[in-house]
Length: 213
Ligand code: PRP
Ligand code: URA
Image 1 (tube, protein in one colour):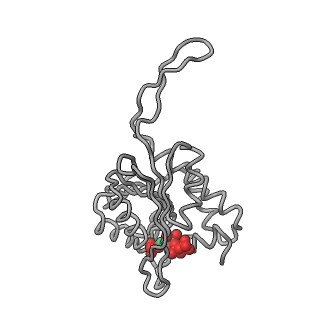
Image 2 (image 1 turned 30 degrees about the horizontal axis):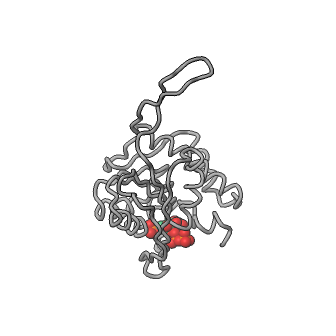
Image 3 (image 1 turned 180 degrees about the vertical axis):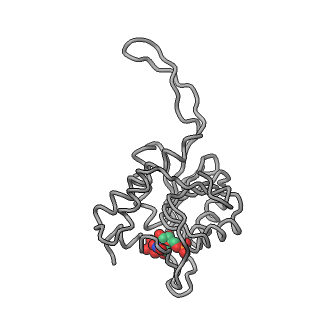
């Protein structure tokens, strides 16, 4: 469902996604369950995101007779933002095993909240593929803005964002920096606190995924 006021933002309201996200938000959910939930939600969202992907005919033979089926027409590149994006891309790759993966290491400075990029390994030929930039948290959008700039610099033109929880401020900032990028998210929350954390959110996604808090 497109979000009011932001035609580029789709919120996946599926009840299974919402139930799993609620458990992930719960502060009592422990690291192993949190990790499993993030992978599951990402996989369900990838199913939704690829709903309109073009297919082409594929001729095969069943044990009974020839059959013309279909396969996805375009190559996909997943670009998880380290660290927390990894928790989602691992889940998505179970659904889309032929997707290529590029990695961007970005963290935000705790004082300034500005993104610091420390690793960039994007696959050659990314320009010819459909790119999904992945991060569970779209807070100020500093990290996603930096990531989208990097994939654009690598030549990508067909770019989407997948996140789990977005803030209204982050969506505005993303749309101002990179207008027209489709965003798929499981929730748009109330806003940011004074430290740039999403409320109600789910806390620090990287720490909860990797048990580093
Ligand atoms: C978190 C999160 C996003 C970013 C979102 O990463 O995974 O990448 O913050 O915030 P923003 O929209 O304000 O940029 P963090 O900086 O904590 O790095 P980490 O995953 O390495 O812990
Ligand atoms: N990064 C996180 O992991 N969580 C937030 O709420 C904001 C930024």
